[in-house]
Length: 494
Image (cartoon, rainbow, N blue to C red; front, side, top):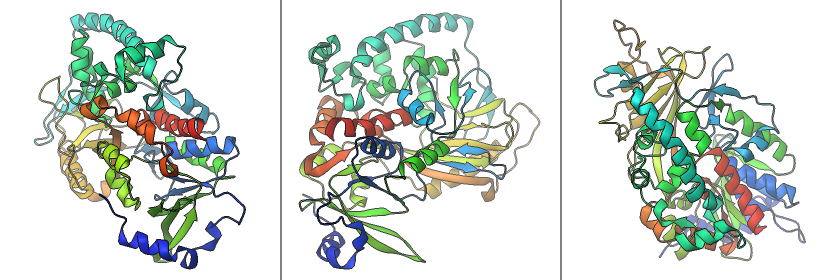
């Protein structure tokens, strides 16, 4: 059993007298929909509500919109992504619609094949080139890619919609799901990605996808359910990672800033406003929040017609908003997992045509997830600042300070041109780390919750207590599926 925080109850008692009156609607005016979170899911929700003529108001605890799509900009204005940076035309149709509403330009980018990749030992600093595929392996790859594409279209495409809902009873896809899937998720996709590949006689692809999955924040292919592995590796994204086509590189932070400017014409977006209490005990939900006020902060309040939670719905995140969870919410969201994932912008000696990945025990497993940097990539020819990603342990806390210190000590051992065998590594100074962020990354369900119908439960609680849920959990922690998650909430329930 869960209880509201004491301060939440106190605020409820005094809300009509001590909080900002401007936030309350006039006597006969319906309160706005309140959206907590101004990342891609929240912005997509607001945009869809606007299109339907429904008033909304947004609350974002960060100082800028974009959620995890943040960036660091150097003196020349060059952006260095701390979040999303890549997309493809085939797998990002809703994202493309957003991009077309902005002036931000994209450039082609090769995810594979154009850089010399070096593996590094994070404890010793020893480096070595990563070997290219042998000629025989290329033949295997040529056979496995069409097989994977066929299986993806047969097994995943029929259920690959937000929150894995299938509601077209006249389609053969729907009949397939009724026959082979439980609660919209086929049983075969609840096993680990590695197990699914083995069951389908795919031997080389899983080894090639170990690092793209782990280094970009999505965990160990031997652990993460195949549902998410297939969601991430659409056929055209797979082709980009094996070097058969290019992806596109873009400043997603600037994209969402510009999109938010359009949305804010009708929908207020309150930045640096952290929701501390969500009171759903009355006819209408009421939010209590803090916002900066001089050198301190002040409280505010907002009555809502409904509330959209547009952030990863982990128990920790929900408790931070002061939400008094129902039993169904507690049971469901206790199963939501995220990864300790960190991103950074670092001044570092690395040629543009080279990249680093952390060394693994063998080709079937990713680097250890102990908080060390697992990848280093220089994304601009005109800057000596690189982007690095670090990966921490699952199901346990890792502090930002610890991971930042490990980043500095590890990169100090390899701060040199890896192609120059006589070059000596230069220790990094703390100031060389220009930006460092910790993320509650990749909300998802593990095997057992998927088998027990977690997505059916999520769809069932939508709208209960005038609450709705939109985030990367709707499909995958990528921009496209965060956007679709927000759109789906409005299309389905408003």
